[in-house]
Image 1 (cartoon, helix red, strand yellow):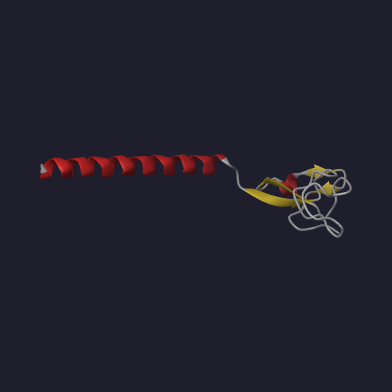
Image 2: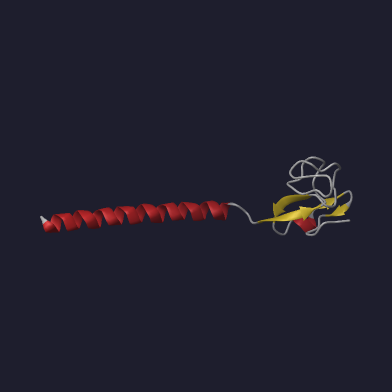
Length: 96
């Protein structure tokens, strides 16, 4: 009887550990599927910025003009400074 309980407990422990391991694997896959992002200033269209857009604005969607220098949009890491707009390239720091 004691060995049966021990065997059941061990089986249950293995099942729980396996479920935890599988769930950790799914979380890692989701994290790997999301690309790393960075703030890119001067690339957002009016009302399409992701957050802070200078004096008089509060957050997402509040930029007043296209390519506002102090409004940022999240882009994949490494893409910002390659993004060309009619006002120049994107910047990792706010533009004047």
